[in-house]
Structure formats: C-alpha cells, structure tokens
Image (cartoon, rainbow, N blue to C red; front, side):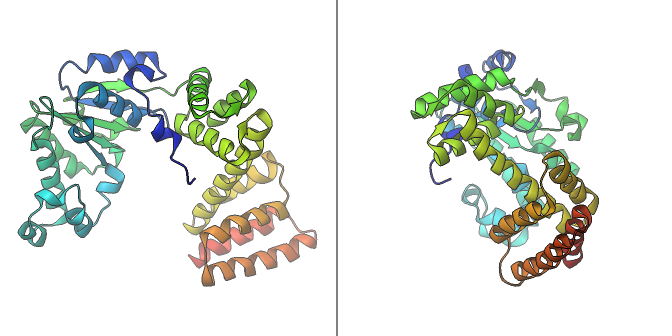
Length: 336
C-alpha cells in the first residue's frame, strides 16, 4: 500500500476503543502510573489501547511514551542497538566498545526508565510482544521496575502472560483485551470508511468484519485494500479482493513451512487449499509460482520454475495432485 495505513491514520482515542470493558479498565489506570500487563490475542488492539491510554494520560505522548517492540529490540545485534537513534543518545562510545549486547540492552532499559518526562510527572514504557523476553532480561527488567516505579509506568503487552516471570506479573495489574466482536469491528470500519469518503454498503463492511475473525488490524487493512483496489467496499468487491489476499497468505505460510523443513504443516495447508478451497493441483501450482516471483529471484526462482515444470508434467499425466505438489514442497525443504 502506498497510501498511509488507515490503522495508523485512524488510531482510536481511549473513548473510541471498541471494547467497553477495556475502556473502563484503562480509565482507572490514568490516575497514577500503575504498571500493567495488557494481554490478549493477536489483532485484538493491545498496542492501540496502550497508545490511547498514553494520549489520555500525557500532555506530550509523542515524547513521554517509549515503545520497544521486544521481538525487534531483543533481536537486534549489538551494533544495531548502539546505533539506533532512539538509544544512541545514552550509549557512549566507550560503553559501545566494551559492553556486550546484553549489557547494552540492560543499559537501554535503565536509561529509558530514568529519562525525565517532557511533560507531566512520569514516562510510560511499552514493551510490546513481551512473550519474547528471555528470563535473564526479565530479571533485569524487574530490577529496573523496582528502582524507577515512582517516575516510570511500565506496560507489558503480550499474547502469553504466562511467559512472564512471577515477580514481574506480581508488580503489574492485569488488563485483559478480548477480541472485538463482529458488530464492534463493523462499527469501527464504518467510522473509518465514512471518514475516508469511500463508498460502501453494509453487506461489504460486515463481510470484511467476518473475514477478520476478531483481528481488528486485519479488518482495517482488509477494508483499505478493498477500497484502494476497487474504489468501494461491497460484498462483491470485498470477496474478490480478500479471497486473493487470503490465498496469498496461505501460499506464503505453506512455503515458509516447506523451507523450514516443516513438511507436515506445509502439507496440511496444501490439503486446505485442495479440499476446503477446492483448488486443483494446477491452480495451487500457479499460485505458488505467482507468490514465488515476488519472493525469490535469481537461481532460487529458476529452481522453483524447474520444480514446477516437473510437477506440471506429472499433473497433466493424471497423477495425484496432493502427491505431486507435495513433492515440490518436499524439494523446497531439501534445498533449504
């Protein structure tokens, strides 16, 4: 998408969060900087809810909310951490040279927590996707939380609160974020689409909401994709657009599993495509090549076409679709 993402352009305020219970729970947390564990399924709106809370609680949320995506942050190399513009201001050249990656990450956590707020009395630090924090870093985080509890609010967002060590969970109030209902998602989509001036009908909006299956981010991106490709959101345009998007996701997931050697999972997706979606082996092969052209290049793409050519020949000979396309997936795993 070249246009700004609707999910960012129409970020909700605290009053606009679709889940009523969540709105009430977060309002109670704005009076003082209590630490929170915000947990719920993917796409339920955990990050958006924390940003809405920060906008409500801080005069200058752009500066007083520090967001760290744990999956990205803890996956950084030492060089990437030290050179990141968010952290480089409090990492000296001596520390950069003499510290390990673990030391740098611990230092960033300490400095982020101790940095004075631009407005108000405290900062908010969001640790997103926190299920990825290793236990040793959680222990370091616990010590930082203890030391800076008066001036820093920690909000830990996660799909798996059980991954957090008990000392951290005991220092945080739990906030459950359930998946929004289809009706709640429909209301959000209607407001966004009307603000964007896009033509729509109720059947189209309801179809997108159902397609998202409780994932609000998926719903908003699906509505935007439909609007940009078709110029309107109706049942027909949403079905045509999102059917293609869904197939791309399935094919990409199947290729990921095949390359990782997870042949059972790859074949399970293949069965879904052949049985549940009713595609023929040739149609699945065509989709693999289409997705593969945006995924591979050079020798990898040439090898994919070679394998596909062999499979296509056997499919024309009347051999089993499942066996022949499965053979291609197995070969991809072997190549990896």
